[in-house]
Length: 130
Image 1: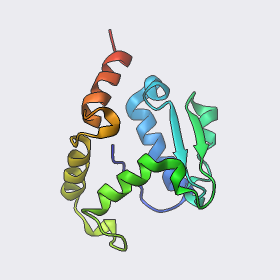
Image 2: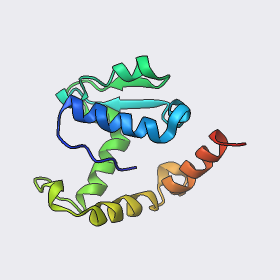
Image 3: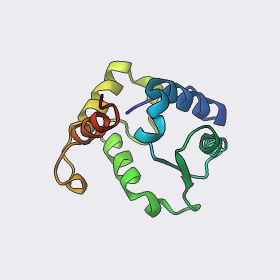
């Protein structure tokens, strides 16, 4: 899932998370059981999410990117399309949608060679079962 964040500020991250919360409604905490941020100032308000929802919030230790290896791997995948130092704002929404689709349909060894999209759909089907 890719969500546009308008600036690298705590308020912009909070706004983006509020948009995601409204998208998933009461099931937000079932869909997103945990969220991990680093210690960047843009994540300063992240812990307030725990008071609004049942989602657990974790923070990595400074200079410890190894604590979130899967996230770092995903960043590397994104860098195939958007090299470090390039502005994301230079890319169209169609470009970003293509990258998101490519990443979500890429089979992963860590997922037993299933795609994130497949497993997310299975997860949502369990949550939104009628």
